[in-house]
Length: 269
Image 1 (cartoon, rainbow, N blue to C red):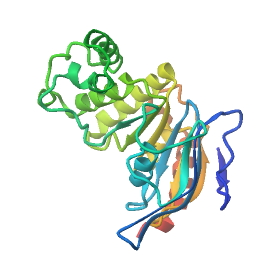
Image 2 (spheres, rainbow, N blue to C red; image 1 turned 60 degrees about the horizontal axis):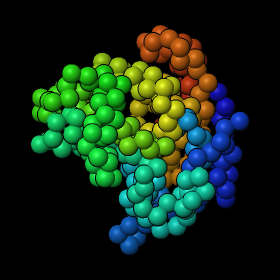
Image 3 (cartoon, rainbow, N blue to C red; image 1 turned 90 degrees about the horizontal axis):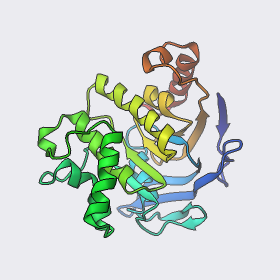
Image 4 (cartoon, one colour; image 1 turned 135 degrees about the vertical axis):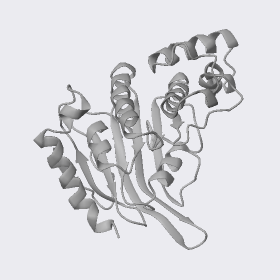
């Protein structure tokens, strides 16, 4: 593991031998006239890696994710993707929501293909792409089902398939596994890592769970309490070749969890 304190006036250096895809430079947000949600956020996201945003409740993790998605315009600073400033939502970024955000009147096939439909992709082509990703996330055979006929884990798989189907370079995931039970959460974590090995996507992942962040992440960005700033960057180097239970029993994993908690506890009231 390596720890890196953020320089106050510049984005942190990229991970060694990694090409950055996204940079946030002095990003701040003030809302309601006088409430500062984020202040001077600097971060660099390496291409093809998973970066987690971790911090106390109310620190601005989801707000920062929405700024990166182009849903909120920052008050100060800029976010760039491959050097181009973010000026709104774009095809290079796809969101996976905490509450699944599936259309209740649409089948799994139509939900997964919805982003392609919005982009004007013909029906035959979008169904082909949707079926591929439905199979990738383990939902083959459920194409004609509706969201109310699925378990929470299956609905989240459908949401992930929809994000993958639009073939964006960056997946933005807002606590995507928090609405399922612990057993399903661990299975979805394992499945996500396997999918990323195949898809080679860049992921920015908001979570409240230290354990989840350590298990999934190549880079963990720890934010301070509001106004959110980057406090510490942790770059785990754990071996993820075993299953999640084996990994969580290793000394390295437990050391990382304890060290991150030591850095976070000062912000928890």
